[in-house]
Amino acid sequence: MFQTILIVVLVVMALSLFVCFIRTVIGPTMSDRIVALDAFGINLIGFIGLVMILQETLAYSEVLLVIAILGFIGTVALSKFIERGVVFDRD
Image (cartoon, rainbow, N blue to C red):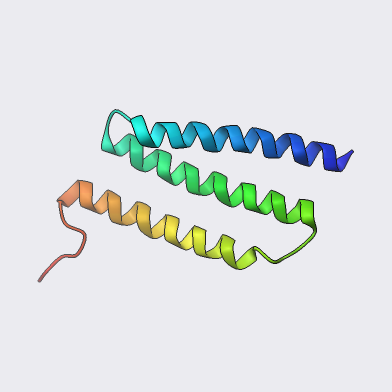
């Protein structure tokens, strides 16, 4: 029963990843694209976590950490670029 629930949740997460990808590609504004890209990263972390549970392994834990760190840094950098026009301030 638990395996069936995991597979159903993986299908729903895959649909969510697809919708976030579509919003990233055709978002009307740059802010919408950044939020969709952040949501895509969060959904991807959840998807990989569910695969880890389904396979009963910890092999992808480093991948999860790297995706989380890159997603956070990317969101902050893109938000700063939209706000000020530069990513690195020169003093």
